[in-house]
Length: 417
Image (cartoon, rainbow, N blue to C red; front, side):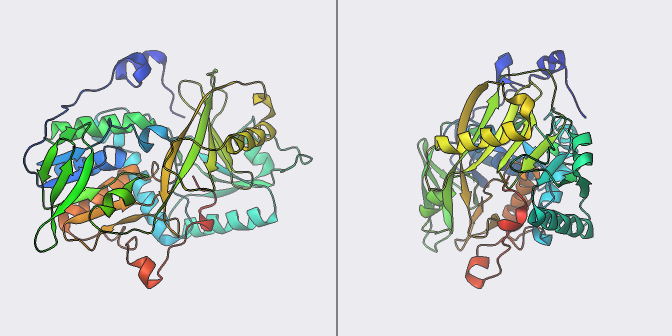
């Protein structure tokens, strides 16, 4: 397991609490660009980086209404895995995982990727059948996954409670050893710095107010709070608000936006060795390198753009965590927060061209966006640069909702995060 000392964190500047972060130009917008990316999170910054690095398109602007990494990129629980059921999803997320494995070297910036393993708990016969199906499907698709007994799960994660008399007894688990965590804001900073070095303009505090189209109906540029910026290629990657932005071009998307909650505890010494997830009781837990227990909850049942959620969601999650890991019952919660996730009817993303020439979209990730960051960014850049999808993201079109070719990873994802 990868660990970093406090001195190493200071040297690398990996935390706003140390009062330092890598610098990039907060550029003033030019009159026109070869491509514009709307959204300054990990996906948008990564797409700009790959446009410049892989495809040689360097006259690129990333426009962000707030600050870099201030949206869902900075509000997630950092989990990375690729053990999805269907072939399309497994290929997409494993593409991302392979890029994660070399991302710190690629960006020359430590994103703190730690392959500590992701373990998914089974609490009943149905869970066992589902997870064993996942294990076999993953292996067929070349993705690592293995089945553990309850005792083996306890050996891998000693704090886990496997008492058979609890409300939701642990009967076994599926383990992806290549899975793990990364530092969320470090990913945004690393991509921002690398893209900036290649000539990409990063324009913060620049909200998009409209998408202008020419006489033929193609994209002509974006109206922003800092004036009109011309471009014949616009990619939208604004998690939680993509449908609002696309509506400016009269493109309707099958998306709903929901609040999603998470929380962290007071920091303690290293005590938790991996990531543990439970779909049945919908809670998951890992430990950050600062020592906080990072706890994830579920989405609220109502649609909203508010970055908060119902108290009952967090309460249910904490009750589940205390049952699974009794030693943490005396821990105090340090803070909680909410993000906004946009989801499609089949709970799988859209990375595709839109019906408007020159307008591209990357959205609908639900709770899977962070783990997909480098892969989604790379595939989005390919789609924008070539005006056609990469074979990996070709199934993730808007048209699948019209034609009925749904990927339907909703119930098959084992857990939604």
